[in-house]
Length: 289
Image (cartoon, rainbow, N blue to C red; front, side):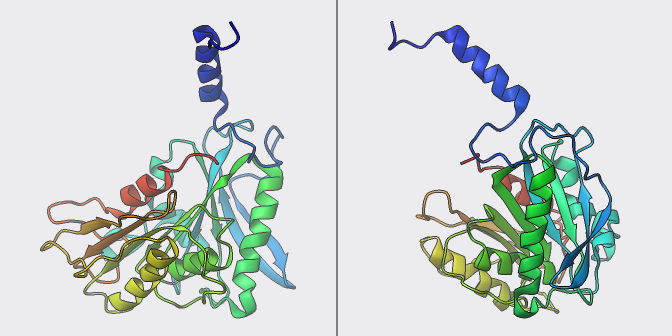
């Protein structure tokens, strides 16, 4: 009697899970609380500097649902406001929230930090400390699945995501680096983190070799088998390479295209940038731990 599962009970539990969201021991302290944080800009003191950031809640925020937490870092000369509002993708601009909010279906909270001097120099690790403080503030007030934190960015923003993965590998489940390079440092950098990278072979701002350098660190850290020869675009279309033999839970995906320094690159015959879909699919393959 005790060894047989009751199918009615099992079905009830499944329905309950679907209603309340992720169920795990990794729910943040903010779960169940009426939130004070809203979708707007905030200021926080970090190392005696006033730092600004935006928060974007789902349109139908549920205080009992453990959401993904996604950090979106802007490029050099950009700003958090430009990530929130978006720019003309036909001129190399970013789509709002790198296109992720539009496909998140109310499952994610977005944090959009603003860089000092419009960039992420990360002097003395100050931008990583900024990240630490934001995680603390957000998760104390909002309902987050703490095993599902993610980070993405274009150019300098990609470099900052890389710096976070190096310095805080236990705090991010995966990152997505769009046309990045080693600009924000890599303190640590010896632990595995699930890694998505994307770069253009015609990048006139940050050479593709820099993007490959970032990728290769996590190919090694994640125990993946290196690919030879180096993947190349298929004409005007991007080519996606999923590395093999990676440690379980630590995949590496690399997308190479023939474009320039562009976060909104498209394939031939398409007007839809491929980074949002690729990034979202990469992030959402992970379940709560």
